Length: 81
Image (cartoon, rainbow, N blue to C red; front, top):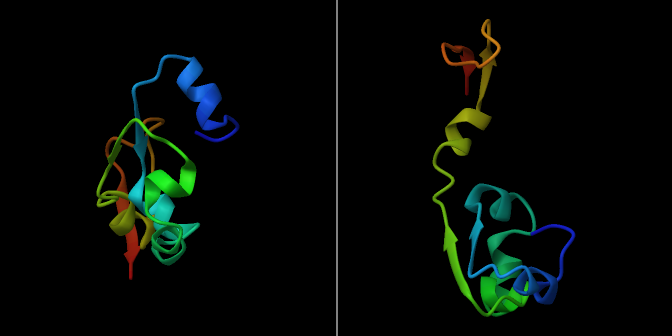
């Protein structure tokens, strides 16, 4: 959680946190996280942790999207790499 230390987050009563794999790979990168002993050691969190696959963001980041609706529910890809 940006802006909080693990101790501050624990003080809120949080029992579990979620890590976004896409963002973790973007920065700091899996190499650095591995070199630091894994995600728990890297961030100093001793409680439960989930990570998502990042599968939605990866293809979406490769495409430019046109959105005609405020919610983008019916977005149309303009160009995909």
